[in-house]
Image (cartoon, rainbow over all chains, first blue to last red; front, side):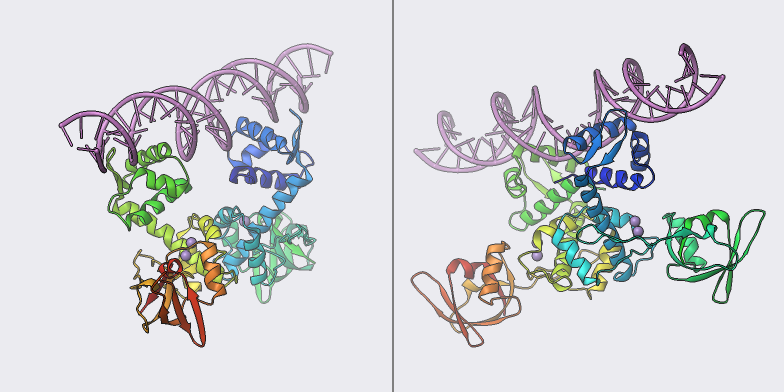
Length: 216
Length: 216
DNA sequence: TAAAAAATTTAGATTAATCTAAAAATATGA
DNA sequence: TCATATTTTTAGATTAATCTAAATTTTTTA
Ligand SMILES: [Mn+2]
Ligand SMILES: [Mn+2]
Ligand SMILES: [Mn+2]
Ligand SMILES: [Mn+2]
C-alpha cells in the first residue's frame, strides 16, 4: 500500500485540484508545510506508482487511481470527524487533528462498519460531504453568506475556513450548521452584515460572511 | 513524542518482562520480526531517552517512564479491541491487527472519551485487563484449564494464545469468555480433557487446555 | 523579445529504521 | 578451565523522507 506521507500528498493534490486543473509544486509544499524540493522528489515517486500525471515543470493532476486513494482518505477523515462529534462529544473545532491521524488507519472493514454504526451519515460536522464506499458523494450547492442580499434566507450548511478560531467564533455566535438565517441588513461601507436567526441579530464582518456557506 | 516504532519496542519489552526480569536482544527481535542488529540500534536510542535501562550485553528493562508509555499503548490497544467487538460487531479473532494500528493514535483525549463512551470496561474481548487512565489495572487470578482436576468448575476468563486460529477454534466449540465449565474427565494417556458446558461435552487436547484460562 | 522574476528541479547531505556480515563478549559444558 | 556455542554489538550499506543551495526552466513584464 501507500505510506502515510504518500497519502497526505494525494489528499493535498486532490483538495488543490478543486481550484485549478493542474497543481503546482509550491502550492503542495505550502499545504504540507514542506519544501518544494521535497515535493519534487515525492511527485516522481507518485508518478512511478501511476497515482499522478506528472511532467517536469508542468504541474500535476491525479490519475483515477490516485483520486480513488484520495477519496478513501477523505472518506475516512470525515467519518472519523463525525464519530468524534456525534459519539464522543468532541466539539467541531477539536476534531480535525485527531482525524488527520485516524484517516491513515488502513482497514477497509473498519471504515465501512464505522459508517454503518453511525447510520451512514452524508455530511461531516463541518458540512462537507462524506464519500460512500464507492467514493461517490453529492456536495451541497452552497454559496457564501456574503453573496446574499437583504431579506434573503438560507440554511447554514458549511464553512470555507476550517480553522479552530473561526469554528469557535461561529459556535459562540450560534451560527452553526443547520441554523436558518435571514439577512436583515448590509452595511454598504464595509460590507458587514446583520444576520437574523430566530430572535437574535448577529453582526458579521465581510470576511466571516465570506467563509460561511449557506444552502437556499 | 515517540515514534510508532519506539512504541512497538516498548510494548514488546513490557510483554517480555512479565516472564523474566531482564529481556534479551534476540527475544525482542523475534517478537518484532526484525534482526538483533536493528534491536541494538533501537535500544541505544531508547536508553538515550531514558525509557529503558540498558547496559551492553546485559539485557534491558523498562524505566518507570518507559513502563508508563507501554501501559498507555496497551490501554489503547485493549480499549480499541473492546470498541471493535462491542460497537462494530467484529469477531474476537478479527480485531488484533486493526488495534495494532489504532494503538498508535496519540490523542489522550480520544482514548479517555472512548473509555467513557463504552462505560469504562475492565477487560478486553480476550479477557486481558484494560489499564485505566493512571495505568492501573487488576489482572484476574487465572490458571490454565489443564491445571484443573476432574469435577472442578470454573469460568473461562482468558486465553494464553491470541492467534486467530485458536480463537476461532474456541468460538466454534463455544468455549468463550464467561462460559462456566466443569471438568468431566481427563484422559490419563494424552492428558486431553472432557469439558462440560451446560448440556454439551467438549473434548479438548492438552495443548488447547493449556492455552485456555479460567477463574475459580 | 530579452531581461528579470518566479517556479521547479537537481545535487548533495542528513536522519530514522532497517539490513548483512564480521567482530566481540558472554555463557555452556566436557 | 578452556574450547565451543550462543548472544550481542559494531561496521558499513540501503531506503524513505527530508533539507539547503545551486542550476534550470518557465513566466512575466518592461
Ligand atoms: Mn478535518
Ligand atoms: Mn471536516
Ligand atoms: Mn490484541
Ligand atoms: Mn486483546
